[in-house]
Image (cartoon, rainbow, N blue to C red):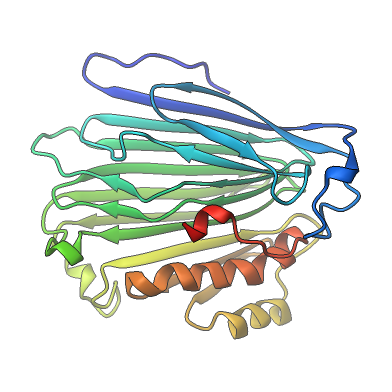
Length: 296
């Protein structure tokens, strides 16, 4: 992991470093009976974390037993403004099981300046990880530059999603000006297997285009990475499509299934959680148990 450094005078930096690692043995009597993966586990996934600024871990929880660590990332200021820089460096060591979520929506605020708000997420993955943050709201006049990079080993497995809402339409605000740019990359040992690049200007014609968002102001991307020697076979993908037909699913690599969802915001979360419930037993060999935080 990179050392925690300080901000320059022109920017405000918050950084969080996470390290999921194995501690063994544990008292298996404390393992939850709600999932088959936790029963009889002879190890515990522990979480080390360091922070600079207000980006931090609220608590490490074990609602599904000691093998799986739930981590809640909190950002007390609630939003990210022009000139701000947020960085997350996450390491998932071999044999670990981690789930990362957030208690509320992330917000990219509008700015009258020229400095963009920046986010950089780097994930080094050798264990199992679920990256399941709440939605991200991009305010009008926001300037955003976001990078998410995942480097996965041969046995690594991951479920992740990214849910974007442009503007605050319930308050009569649309994303008329500003710029949102995001790169999502997944690397395996063989090299880069997926680079998803999104660049949307305020008032972009792509919001209404039939080859763009087709009149929607929100969309989500899901990815499901399986560990070797498992692969996404056609019968397996068809079973996912049958259970989540509103999502457009594509196999981009024998190990990687990607889904894209265009729907109104009130239906988005329900459909994402349904897809996660379908994918979790396939990718992680663990039955679906919603984090309690999602019900609040």
